[in-house]
Image 1 (cartoon, one colour):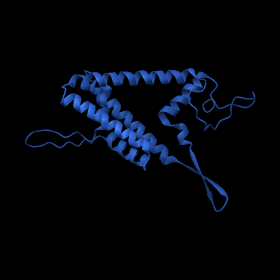
Image 2 (image 1 turned 135 degrees about the horizontal axis):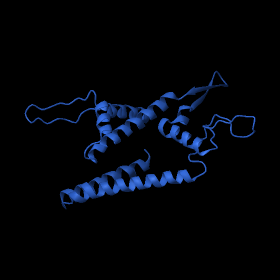
Image 3 (image 1 turned 180 degrees about the horizontal axis):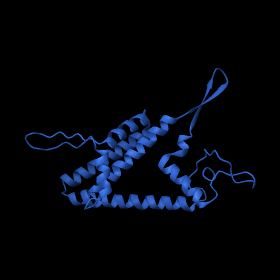
Image 4 (image 1 turned 30 degrees about the vertical axis):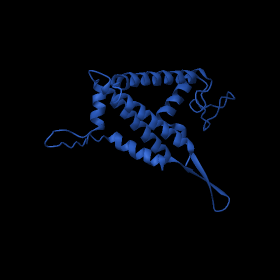
Length: 199
């Protein structure tokens, strides 16, 4: 077992104990239930914006070595403006394709030797599908949770929640009329994708 995983597990347990003691023993529900989560969200958003701004100021926004197109060299050879962009528009299109559709991961191939020294290439399409399913379902879950931060809840978030929970399963207790949390499609896809990627 990797020792770094143990450090992370210990850190999670310590953070849990700090919040548990703070709420149960010291009565700091407002600090641990409101202040710290909002500060964490603000730090996350600020750090994310800082990283993206750093990427936009660099000459190459992402180091993506798997390019397939011709670079801009000689005037009679047509360059590929998406794989090897030379303009800001090309960089923006390439970034959108990478961020939303993992284009370079889709082109990922695995090399293996067959029948002695014969080289064979195979597409890693299932790694791409698993990564795409994980990230898109995770994005759906995050957007769906915006309903906790907005009042009134925007129509698009309500629509996404209805589409995501079109076969929502709720079990009601007869006596107390309490419902268990519904099962959403994005939650099932997220669990399946993260299990596949882990394996």
